[in-house]
Image (cartoon, rainbow, N blue to C red):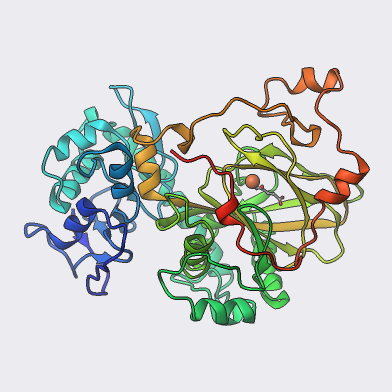
Length: 479
Ligand SMILES: O=C(O)CCC(=O)C(=O)O
Ligand SMILES: [Fe+2]
């Protein structure tokens, strides 16, 4: 394989938290690999390149984008744990449907479901000398030959799986040749955004952190934010693309383990549009709104999907969503419609691993076009819908660097230590799927019911008057 690379010149910016190993990778490009143009570094220390397989290869139907390195986590971890910058750094297959989570013969997962290469055997191939050249060579060897690193059969199967997904996207694109949301390299346009948000983002300095919230962003509870995101016309365009896909016979993978209805938008041709939404809106807002989070400067990939709920009167469908936390660092949840749905509140409890994990903290009502941005580890769930239909776009936004650190045990599982649970366990926060004590608590009438007064107190409508920045007061557990 040769490495094919995008056109922009390499750009490595200085930043306060740059990871010196990643940075040195970005500035020390291999001489022995043929690059069409130099690799690109979009955020400091994060290098993007693409592998271009030869025509005879099972991978040859497309190029394989990879990102290596990543800004923001490495040196923070060094400060926490001491010592030099740690290996392995993040190596992630980007924009691919590659999942080789099954174990290799050493019992190690090879590639996880966000594309992260997490096998020790791969890293032992890279050895002491962590350079782009060694990483690329080890990847090519892993994909093409050596069964001790996951087996070529597993990789061939992953290539076939990816090719089928790729063909599905192309078929859908051919059915809607003028749909700008599914075009290759689609971008989020200014006209897709609420005008106030759009002008705010265009004036936001790159290093900005939260000193006070702009008036159009509310923080009804620590580290939960709401703001107008999409105008109605753009919600309607998104719905029309979703509806068009639903009406085809193309394969529909449901969005996560809990929702039975909805689509993975990354798999219906919308990945590029969603990546643009992440880099133009979610990444800058995460830096600003979650400044104390170790990952907030390095959000770089996402699992984006839509969820669909229908009231009983409309027949089969999901009615509500059980309590859970997300497989994300930061989650965007925006309601697209449909006009006239009833009830369907979004309930929040505490952070996973914190003493108040199952204590109710907030209830929001969805409003079309309004976004909720929250930490993935905050427990939440959706109430029953009582009328009509509701479709929301959900982006689970993630950091490669943070996930690589977690995968290698540099940060505790789930990122955070567990505290002893406190005495408050509210019934609304119990999860049928995730709590072993759910049945016993429900049977014994356990879990505090919220009083009428408490319900009122906890109900906070969207567009509540702006508060001063809540981030500094948040009770997020740190490591
Ligand atoms: O329906 C909602 O608003 C919540 C969806 C959600 O939390 C999820 O899909 O992770
Ligand atoms: Fe969720």
